[in-house]
Image (cartoon, rainbow, N blue to C red; front, side):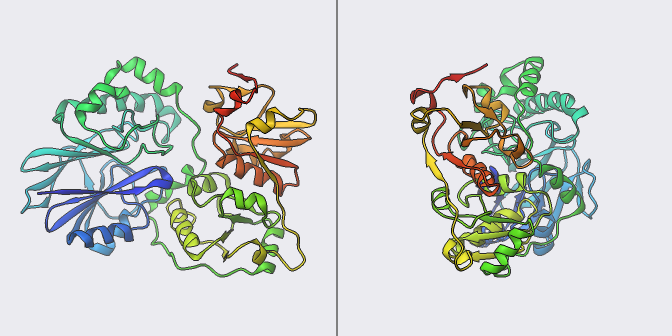
Length: 454
């Protein structure tokens, strides 16, 4: 008998997998915080004998090198990946034994497209394929995006994605479980994945790469590519060089005076509380990235790379969870941190800042004189509909373009409220009069606002 345990990395929209028999197991595409995988193997009572990468990742820092070092496992990386450390190079067709007693082996299948060297791994039980770890190749209903390596390669890689998907569909039985790494909210996915599980047979009926001819597939794929998070530029080099071990010990404690000093120095002080609490009262100049939201994605996307960050958390648990998320994208050590609430974080006699939260109905009922409606959604989202007369500055560009926001009271919105809260905190820190629209964009037209598509 075999098992497959899936380790969710929900903040980044990724998954890692632990698969094996009674004695030994393989880990596929591990996140940087490897303790979760070590614990999963301990619960199963198995030894991790192999760690494999489907590709050099562009969206997170891998834990593969460290996991292999700690466990003594063989570390397998596609042979075409140019890395700076010792590993076992994997070629198309290579096989490795995972658990002899259980009759488990892993077969490498070259599936270029997400990257030129991308490799999938077929889990076989007594020679029969039971699952395939597809990384950023075949996802649920879609494929991994082909534009993260080199712009000049994008179209060729898109065509390779189509061919790789068809290879998987042709060579594997319909009941083979498809276990991707990306596609659950990850910006490495070229489209929105629906559902949590799938098989080769199911993908044959619905996957964009398997139901369209190559030319129409490539045209649609390239037209639908969205913005790339800025921090992706740092992930590939980190994974190529070989990431250092993580340090998740608590950072130095900052008191109110140090928090003020760091703000004065231009450093980022990030309040991890939920957006309702932040709007009601916060240290002036601090920024709101909710711990419950896509903290790692948006903080890493917006912050100037390498700038010191101080974290303000409600509890030690919230702080520890945030540290764990951030190391996955290369923000290794907060400069300092504090827990509790804004009354402890502000200096004695210092007033807390606040701003109003509202809905689209509130906006529709307010005279528009002196009001700026700011849409911080991405281009692709705005193309599906926008509030007439609104200004558009995608969130990931806003901190560089605050000077472009017209004078007046700024009512800022996104699709649901989380990104509007980040934007509102940026505007508030810059001294603007801001209202955060904490509402679903679907409510805008129902509220009486004019929504246009062109």
